[in-house]
Length: 423
Image (cartoon, rainbow, N blue to C red):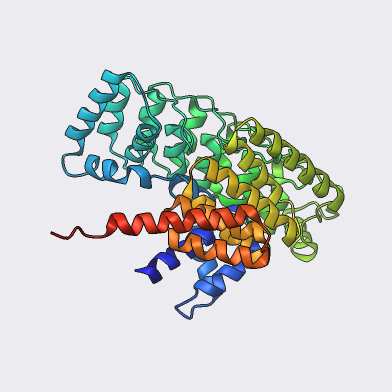
């Protein structure tokens, strides 16, 4: 059991590394998880995304980072064979109290992710807000993440907002492109989704398609007026990204609509592909990356002080994607772990703390974050171990000493409560 839990923890950490695009840590984790002899490449492929373009980032958004464990018993009860009847009772309760508690929002998101259109219709008919927000975004975004066009159709018929932005970067259209659902993309375009939306990293829909989608989705976006001439903040264009990915089919689609680029001397499909294959993409400006990371860290601190922990976490995520050193990456992970802790998102907090400690194994704060995550998970034994490790690294750390005492007391209390009563 302990071995299985440990492996699950490693897989969660691997997913989080994939979420962040942290290739160095991904390779390190993949070597540790390769128990089949297939090699790290096979493990990386398993988490990097399926053939339909789904990335671990969005799998994490729909399953990993949305922490449902606190309501698992209620969810289990409501998704049994008589789920529709039980959901009706739950809807009556919600209507009676007039409140949507956080766990009820999570519950609704889970039910939508069950793809039961009848339940979705029922929830909406009972007055559930079609655009309600949760830690994982809106119901429309949840449907987009998993490419559920039938659910999406119902939500849009109830006037779900197609251009709502989740956590700075995510729109339903972006998520549909990632999930590889042409049907969802078409539905969203039909109701006015912004095909030229630019996220906080300067990335547009066509750029996402060039990196992750099919040629059908790319063509659909272009037919709807998506502009392929908008570069990202490091001046890479969608056609260069497609060439870098070896996607000749998408390069051919983009070529007639893309303005010639001065750095590509042979302006032809073959010339673009050959140039990018030989020289790669333009190197990112190190000074620009450094300035951008500093801006993002400042924005993250300000958001954290406002108790906007989700937003702060997204700023830290964006900073991680700008080539920080291992030491700086560890600090960013520690800070994002704290954001997850404040949101009581246990798996995310532990995954970040684990990665932080892998990058800086002798940093006391990494142990402290790891211990705090184990405390939130009520794994008090593990919490005691890592707090003790941290105290060895910094014997005068009073916070660590107190955390170790608290973990030990919690472990003793937990064991007493679990002890069977003697007659």
